[in-house]
Image 1 (cartoon, helix red, strand yellow):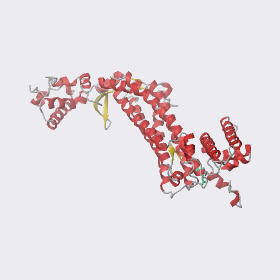
Image 2 (cartoon, helix red, strand yellow; image 1 turned 180 degrees about the vertical axis):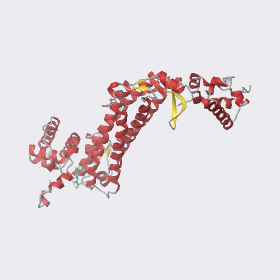
Image 3 (cartoon, protein in one colour; image 1 turned 90 degrees about the vertical axis):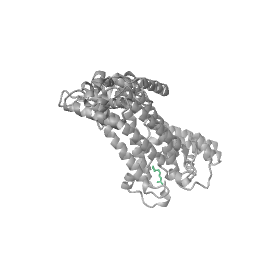
Image 4 (cartoon, helix red, strand yellow; image 1 turned 135 degrees about the vertical axis):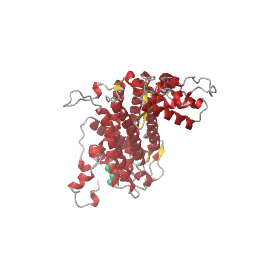
Length: 462
Ligand code: ARG
C-alpha cells in the first residue's frame, strides 16, 4: 500500500510484529459498513459515479459474504482488516476500488470500526447482565424469606434473608448495566473524516456518514478523534468492575456450597469431580469466574499503560488496544452466561441456612435496641449487652437462656418504654422471625420489604 516510497520489502519479522489481521478480522462487518457509508459520501461529493459507487457497495457486500461463509483468505502481508478488505475489493472490481480510500486514513477508519464494534458488543453484554439478574431474582423470589446469617469479617453478624442477599448482587449488576449504557452513549460519535490527523482537503459530508452509521453526531477535533481510546478504556473498566462483582458472588457461592456452610447445592451440570477423590464435587465455575477476573484487570492495566505515554496523535502502540478489548468482552460474555445458568439451577437449603442463623448471639444488637427503647443510651446498652455476652460465653449458656436481670437490673422492663410495641420480656427479641420482620426501613431485609423489592425488580426487568 505504500510501495511508492520504499525500495525494500518489509522484513518478515516486521510483518510478524505488525500484523493485526489475526485478531482484528472480527471488525470486518463494521469496516465494510463504514466503507459503504464513506463511499456514499464520495458519491454525493461527486468523487464517484453512480456506477462506481454501486460496484464498490456490491463488491464490499460480496467480500462480507465470503468472510461470513469462511471463504475469504486473510493475508498477513496485508497487515490488518482494513487493507485486506480494500485489496480484495480492488481485485474484484478494479480501479473504482482504488478510489475508496480518498479522504480517509486507517487512523479514522480503525477508530470508526472499533466504536461500532464496541457499540454492538455492549448490547450483547447488557443483555447478558439482564439474564443473570433474572436468574438471581428468581432465586431471590423463591427464597425471599429463608433466613441466613450475614457476615462482616466473615464472622456471623446479623440475620438476613437469602432473598435480600441475592438482591444485593442484582443491585451491583444494575450499576454495571448502566455503566455500559453510559459508555455506549459517550462513544457514539463518528470519527470518520478526521483523516490521518488533520481531516482532508476533500470535504465529505461527515454528518451524513455519521447518520448512516447510526452515530449521534461527529467528533469535534480530528487530532483527538484519531488518538482517543478512552471509550475502550471505559468499556474495559466497566467490564472489569462487573467481573469483580461476579468474582465476589463466586466467593459467596464457594463458601455457601462448602460442607462448613452448606447453604446451597450447585447442580451436577455446573460442578466438576476429582480425578482422585471420588466424593468431591467442586465449584469450578465459581473459581474460574474468580480467576478470570484477574485477566480482566490485566486487560485494564494493558490499555491504560498503552495510552499513558503517547503524544498526539495516532501511534502504532494503539493497535495493542484490540486484544485486551476482545478478550475482556469474550470473557465477560462467557462468565455472565455460565453464571446465569448455574444460578438458575442451584438449590438453596433453607433448613441449613436457618440453622446457621439460629445462634441467639446474632440478635445481640436487637437486645441492645430493646434497652434503648427502655430509655438506656445506646453506648451504655452496648456495654450491658457485651457483659451479658461475656457471661453467656463464660458459662456456656445460650444468650437467650441467660438470666439477664441477674447480669444487670436494666434488663427489667422500665415501664417507660419509648414505644408501645416493645415486649415486656427482653428474651422475646430472640425470636428470629420477629427480629427480621421488624427490619422494615427502606433497604432493610424484612420479608415484606424483600418481596416488595422482588416485585419492583420483576417489573423493571420485564
Ligand atoms: N491496524 C491499525 C490499528 O489497529 C490500523 C491503523 C494503522 N495506522 C497506521 N498509521 N499505521 O491501529
